[in-house]
Every structure is written in structure tokens, then in C-alpha cells.
Amino acid sequence: MAESRRVDTRGLKCPVPVVRMNGEVRDVPAGEDLHVIADDPAFPPDVKAWCRRTGHELVSLETIDGVTEAVVRVVR
Image (cartoon, rainbow, N blue to C red; front, side, top):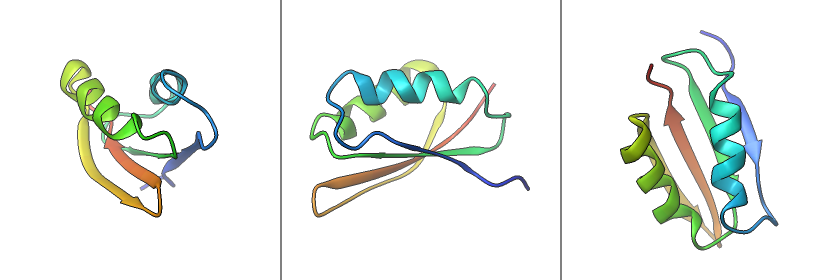
């Protein structure tokens, strides 16, 4: 399996983390994971809504010390 792609959006505010994630996911093959790191408090609900809307799978979502890491599995 290929190495997972990572996107670090710390320091960026809504809607930029989701916009960046949306751009990156286009280059990730189906079945692969995209890891997105964000410190915007709006990111957790935004990534959940984005996954529901796009059909990609939210594998995990964890926030520690104000930094959230989302793992999104790409579905085509």
C-alpha cells in the first residue's frame, strides 16, 4: 500500500482547511487515506459535513491540545 498523503493546515482558518483537503483528495487514489491536521476549532464539524456531502469515509477524528487530525479514506 502506498504511503498516506498528509496535509498540514495549522494556522489556517475556515474554510481554508477544507478547501485544501478538497484539492488534495483529487490526487489520492481510491481506497487510500488522506491525513489532515488542523488547529481551527471549526475543522471537526466541517470535515464531518464534508465527508457526508462527498461520500468519502471519515476513518478517524482526534483532537489533542487543540490540534485535530482527520483520516479520510478516499471513495470514488
